[in-house]
Image (tube, rainbow, N blue to C red; front, side, top):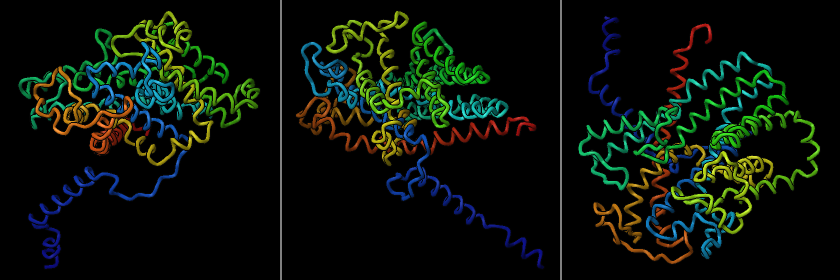
Length: 482
């Protein structure tokens, strides 16, 4: 009798089981969709490199802002003016001023900072192990990092682009870019072909663009740069301190001046900065650095101001040559510094390398700047930075495009399916270039929505992809390595 009662108590009625699963599913969905604004949580204690997280988040916002500045002004002559120097072709706009221009077209220097931050962050743990002489742990760390890197970078991109393409056929969303396939099956086939090529980072027969989100070209570069960093750290791990630093400098020089590898020089520059930061914390820098200590404040403020100036290098995407720089006020002599290894059309990355290196070198040594990137909002952006980078394009091409048309930012190309949106609530374009009333008002809707979608993407794709990569590696690891 006792056994029967116990068995009865252990048997859950089917209705109650369904209700329990439904409750957990609803709770999970609510947790995924609930904006963080509605959740109160104590601020986490800042770690030593929290400013890097804040800088990454602020840089992601600059990328978002530049892409919106350009998209709203498609076909408008003034859109190119934002990318040129103050006074070029007798055009004088507030948004062209050195330093100020980064608040409007700072996406290029932001991407350069991404690459240098990646080189810095990927090197942090391995370099700490190298300094401690823990070479067996170093090999374990690099093996795990290399295994996890591809899924960490590409799985969130896979899911977000697939959902974006699916939305066209499920919800009937029209977007100006890219061209939609006639059926969902054809769309899946095209998406597979595109993503297969995009995720093969060593291909050389085509550009890095992914039609379903061309902003993601930098992810393939991130993967290549990661391989370079992991390989270099292993290769240099047993070198003496000064020899290791010299090798890092030479590798950076090679990518910058010998071959056309400016993007990868940024990763190597981040690795070098990380090594110097670690040595500085242990008071173990090469002796000549200490001779400069009395001039520390002046040096870093000079580097910061120089980085801000170089970060605003004039360029117009897809139709630029070095002649633009030679004809730009304040850049004529700097144009002569371009190495012969750097292509005519991609010259901007040479100047952006130095701009980003100067910024990353100076910010942690200038308290007011470091504190800015440690503020709560920048830390929030830092947590969302990868997802914000992934989804800001699809939000721009769906919601943003329609709101800009409705506010009066009309264009003549590729607009027929959404022509009914044009001028629904026309807004004044009064105000300086880049800050027109009719431009920033739509962002009262676009920006909160974009941040919310980035939060959802972080919870749904970014963090789970990271956890999946770690879990998979732990399961695949040989028993004697666990």
